[in-house]
Length: 451
Ligand code: NDP
Image: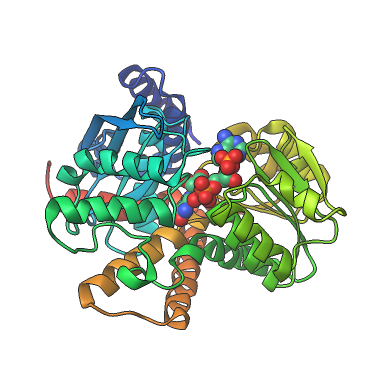
């Protein structure tokens, strides 16, 4: 990066930090994009004159609200609710809802910002948003989760709609929560519309939406590996998380012939040296999605597996690492472990799971590395396909959706290669994804004038 561009980045980040004090995750996400797109922007003066990047980092709208609800014992609780509508230049706002104790404005803004670029990459017409609450669904009864979802939607419904903003799931928001949210939305609006995605199969959901993020991650990772004439077959794969993304990433990696060795949750990880099987996966689905249990129970059920409380899976040597839990879950030490364990590829299922320092270590060691905004885009892309099916009143087969998903992941890979190929022929997927997403959003913003 030349001196002028470097000064531009530092000046820009200084302003972002001053205007958004204390929002650490948001600063981290913005810096990654700004460092990638700055050389492009500084060579197109009209983008600087139009202050496109300055506009993108300021969400179009931030909604914050009170979510009061009552637990099963009659005690009242108050949570914070958020919806950050970041950018609608290329389509209605679209992005998940997260229920997790750690949720705050910084995390919502970083996720909405990332979503804007990710959605642009999918080639579908979707703007970027994110929402959520610091509500922790862990240990809550179905009735408590339902009352919470109804209270959350009692405010959110004013701000969303099939042509305005279409939320979906994320951490802590799966099929059960989408059902309760949709039921309340429908009741308040007296309208059956495709305003949420991730819906049940009997009421407007798309086949393969639950699988899409994890499957899409593996399809993108396949593309990365293919650039070096490699594939999943026979590879040792470490996965973090044991929720939606992790489960289907594990299933697909296993079906592609890999040995999936680990899964985790926020309490620890399991290492199964014999690898997951269809039967073990069926147990994980039942454990996590029906009984809502903890991953340590896996080690009790399958004695060859070991449980490591309070640790992350990255100290176990693997060929492919698929972080699928949460942001900043691979730090510098984890990255060193991944590299020294002989890995060839890190593809992110979670959003921003790798810290900037860890990314430098992974890229510096020459590993294939794909950022979440490219490799986990299959989820939102299939949400886009769910919206299309809802509008057309159609229901596509799993094979049709899978074909679209594969093609979209291939197109994302092609865009990353187009904009991320370095002079030495290697591909910087972070740069490629950020520039490809930025170009599309910036062009739409330029066309639409100063709004
Ligand atoms: P789930 O809630 O289904 O699963 C999350 C998993 O991550 C759980 O195993 C959870 O463990 C673990 N986890 C959450 N927070 C932490 C933490 N602080 N430390 C360690 N483990 C943690 O969420 P998803 O699978 O849907 O989402 C996972 C990631 O993928 C997120 O980054 C999300 O933004 C991203 N993503 C999800 C998409 C989707 O379609 N669902 C689409 C694109 C990205 P525990 O049960 O202990 O909390």
